[in-house]
Length: 345
Ligand code: B12
Ligand code: SF4
Ligand code: SF4
Image (cartoon, rainbow, N blue to C red; front, side, top):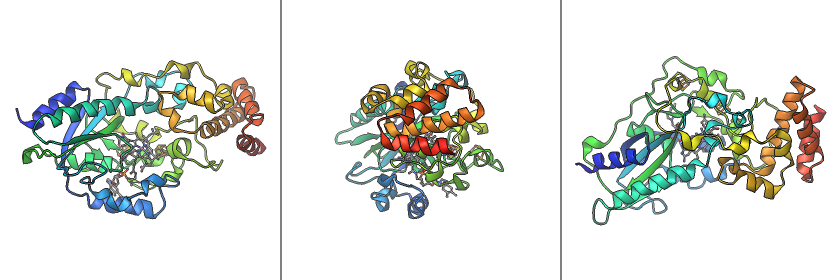
């Protein structure tokens, strides 16, 4: 069996839904696009994206893996058939984040794969990465032919859709040339559903996102208090709108999506309880959940925003009223100030 076949088989055993191989030669066009994104300031206060931006074309770097020859691109689906029926509080969280933290789940399996690859030959190096590494995960996945990048910027795997998370194993192993994938080209055609549906008009052009406007940034990554204009709908953490409308996501979910089942704690929570959290209670509540990526205050501000929205629609909404009251009397003065500004409008 060739090394590529053995790696594929092991990746399947480990629960990955798709795998493809890219040569580790520097990305040129995608890197230029990346630098453009940074130069225009679309990354907002995600300063880590600008760190070493110049170096991100390649992966043969000491902080990743010296001598990398191959980028093994992996995907794990999280589409669940019953996601629309999740408990109301769970539905305020983007699908990928309703269950346990996917980083641990994918990282653990990608590490097992890296270990398997290291055993394929003397001196073979292999290292696993998921999300947080300074590498252009979507561009590598596109080069490997794992999927194509849609106008919403997400990697779409034909037959599987875009509700999937990416990971990589970098390796010094060189594969047979037939094993490397070829890009499959964008297949959006004349569709613009994702661009049209975006509630905050965050796309400046097809494929190009001003992350500062994206609800995902505002509710997860932002580290300064957000502007209070704009309608985030019923969203507290992340946003799936530009994927929900995508025709490529009308595929039947396949495989085991149980790791992404919502944590019971969300069904048991309320807006008022979320606002009232102090830092320790926030840490306890979000332990093992991707929601801990937000700060306590960012989440509280998102809740206040949602409570205000619900009260505008239904003045008798008791949970929303209690949430606003809890924010106005919170010991975090910055939260009180935000709640005052919102209730004044
Ligand atoms: C920072 C970040 C964000 C930021 C900025 C997102 C963005 N679009 O840049 C915020 C917080 C907004 C965000 C949101 C989300 N994210 Co995010 N995010 C990242 C992270 C850490 C870096 C992305 C980055 O470098 N952005 C800068 C842009 C310029 O680079 P890029 O995304 O690689 O885009 C390239 C291609 O799109 C390419 N391209 C391809 N074709 C074309 C054509 C043209 C004409 C152009 C101009 C460009 C272009 O150009 C770019 C340069 O390589 C990656 C993980 C990683 N290390 O890559 C996860 C990642 C992209 N995120 C992911 C997810 C799941 C999400 C959300 C769906 C979460 C949610 N439900 O709320 C949303 C989706 C928003 C969206 N429509 O993109 C997944 C995407 C999986 C997939 N199937 O594609 C990733 C890969 C994490 C993972 N390991 O699975 N994210
Ligand atoms: S995740 Fe939501 S806010 Fe961000 S680009 Fe997609 S639709 Fe727009
Ligand atoms: S919604 Fe349409 S335009 Fe957007 S990514 Fe899907 S197919 Fe492409």
